Image 1 (cartoon, rainbow, N blue to C red):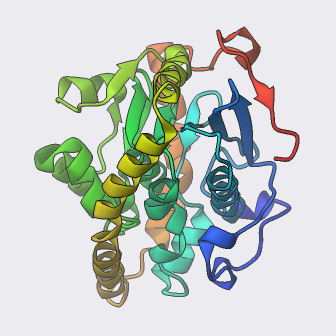
Image 2: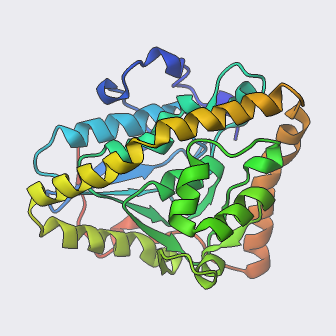
Length: 307
């Protein structure tokens, strides 16, 4: 589960000055084209359990940049694999931020990547999502979530104040009361629990999340691309105008906290415990959280050989 197990993507993210120009091929991020006008981006880092590695960060930017250069893509679906959507930052990344060697703003795809996509993005959050991985899904234009999966903004467990735009987007998507509860308590919720609490996402059984997202993308694909692009540009711009100040405030909070306390023990204690807790919850509930093989899904996938 540690980033060091990955054999690629060790470059310093700071060296990539302009995300919009990144070209970065990695097996951790795959892209398929459906019906000629829908892109399905899959985060699939099985070795690291879909932690948000440097590879994944740069690979996601690469795919969005490729999509933005194509005139025929009308919608994008972002998803994970099996029972994992995205599990947040690696322990190496958390330690680097906690020791003030880096800061959360460097993981820019989480809070800017989906906004920078020219066309609407649907998050198909078919599996568990923690911390920055959950926040990533919240920046999509339309959100489909699994009723069975576990979701948490677990920053504070590590002694972190929430970052990567979470203090803004969680309130926008969940409302202030629920967002505050999630941020302050780091409590885990199933999708069904979030639904009962009034979260206004589309909730499906896990095996139906991706098909539902694709069906929505097909609805969008029937709309004029000029209209889709113009609306996406306007809505995204409203968020992009406020996000820099939010990130600045979140970095300031980190600096204030980490100048006073050492959270390395919390990182060490809770990092692997997150995966152990999820395994216990799955066993206790006897849920089958593995996605159906994509070949059995009622969609036809055209593989993009260039990605």
